[in-house]
Image (cartoon, helix red, strand yellow):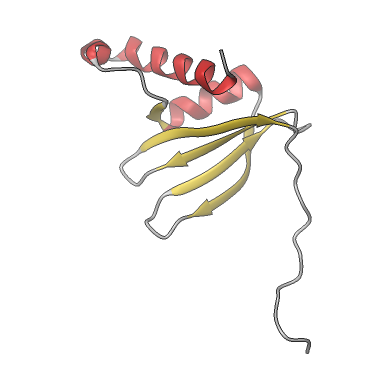
Length: 104
């Protein structure tokens, strides 16, 4: 099972425990942001390392371990629903480059 599938299954299971009525809905890799953050922090020791706001008001986050061994891309919508978009290994932060533009 891929890491994203495993994380998604764990998040959905946690959400279903608190909401028996939703047990009839198909599994998804989306849940409340707080639940996903809590799971990624507890299970993988991942924390936000990069964040951005999209034009439609959604939040895009990268969570990673302090050594960059694992990372997760999380997309949070203004409705409060967050979805796992990708997971991977070997996250590397790049230094911020100078702004592009004509020489001064």
